[in-house]
Length: 394
View 1 (tube, rainbow, N blue to C red):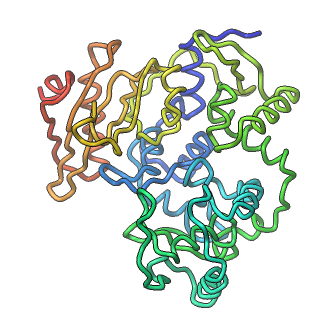
View 2: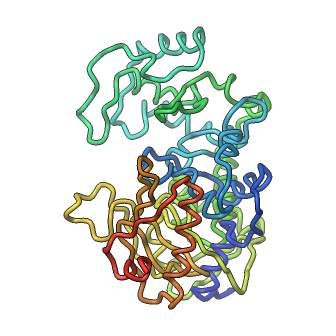
View 3: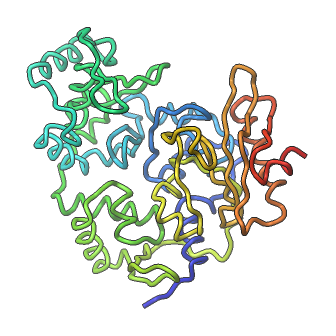
């Protein structure tokens, strides 16, 4: 059995995610498509303290790009390249994955929801569907029945209409046509959102759908355990393990051992195995490289937790902390905020990892300037928190 060092596995993983791809002075839609093929999905999150989550992985790999590329790829019908669905969590995925998700939609329908928490109102479903069918795409607020919003469940304040619309989206009766300027979901009928060829594609057998999702997860990871592969498209461990066995038999995956990993791992057959990775990137907390925290710890010796939901007094590193990737290592982390009103990028805190090289502060300074320019921010203000902050201030 092939044995890989931790460093080899790390470089394979970064290559699979697109950190070896050549930089384009002006990224194009072709660059965007290539990057989307590497990541497979782009997680969507409402936090906008720096930049929306789905924009950041593209920036980390392509560099400064016109965000209109993403909007073009996620709009229209016949030319649409991606659509939102519960693919990892709420995420953009390539439109051709819609048929493979139909089994997931059927499962949500049988459970009447995602977690059994939001119970849809069956009487309201046909009414809302009819309104959208007759009046066109709409947000929940536009269709709200005016009833008090539900405050029973932590983190939600959804009207009854919003809960029903979310259920209809999960089961495939509705699709997300886009989002408005307030980041509210705009719902529409799938036949007005997705290309006709995608809707007409046959539903694969459930085993084939599982193999397709695991194959894509393996391609995006490069090398991974069953746990890593299951997490990518949020699948069950048993169904993932069965798909992995099939892919090994077909020659698409190769069992390998990785230094320091207790669980068996699998190498994607066409994975690139570079000797060097020369990346310099800030990674969103929702980046596929770090979103499975135990994987990030095994690959980079980097213990990482998002602290958005931690009370301020209990935060260790800050509110919106981005890992800093340099070469093939995560060498630091910075708590960032875009102060759009004053045109400043605020570095609330900056910390170096123990193994950070001497040039970390200089390289991070360059990356912060590039990020600020992309976000349209004129100044960078470094606050005196963290062991890396003094060097950044200089």
